[in-house]
Image (cartoon, rainbow, N blue to C red; front, side, top):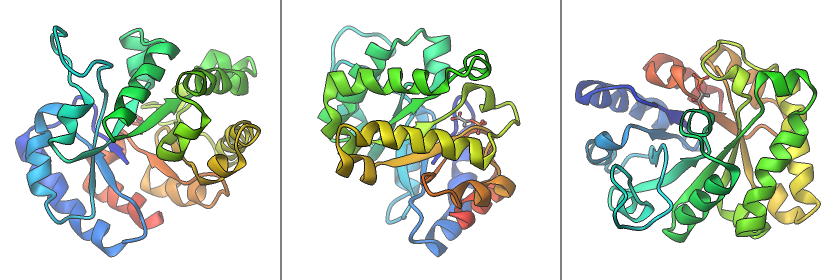
Length: 243
Ligand code: PEP
């Protein structure tokens, strides 16, 4: 899944989506999705007619409509063919002060509209160095479970994204990432083994074409949430091929 963040223009959207059609079609077993900035969703939807590439949004408001200037609701996204929405990306948590409770409310708003939330969780560098990774991701998961129930993860994706690896060029080693993914699955399995078994857990943090295969070889790494490399057709195509 590619998160384009605040990047692109109409020409780039057309170029990138056109370039990704062939690799996505050649790998029908790999679920490919792109999350362009909201202004380009209509253009992307038109380009993706009859394409295996799904569309995602980068954030969602907790309300359906009303006096919330600048926001976009989950129901609005459904009119643009959006299937996925990122909730709790670390840039939203850090730059926009989103709390675990707010993220849980966004998760629910997405599901209520029939979208699949992609819940982003992960620790900062200081938390990693202090050995707090597991406690942090469990706290972030707990809030959603308390708000939406464990069964809500039957229709959700989790993205483990160590904050220290996002946009820094430092990818967690496959072993480190696998350890956290396994711990996330075990935490969920304590509550519902079937849900834990079925939920997709993506890894995110400076994934590139060259690092994807090593990550995907791990038992509990089901895919990748990709930022920078998703803006380069060749890199993203290489990640798709590794899937
Ligand atoms: C992201 O923004 O979710 C991300 C993983 O970014 P990058 O791949 O650039 O680290």
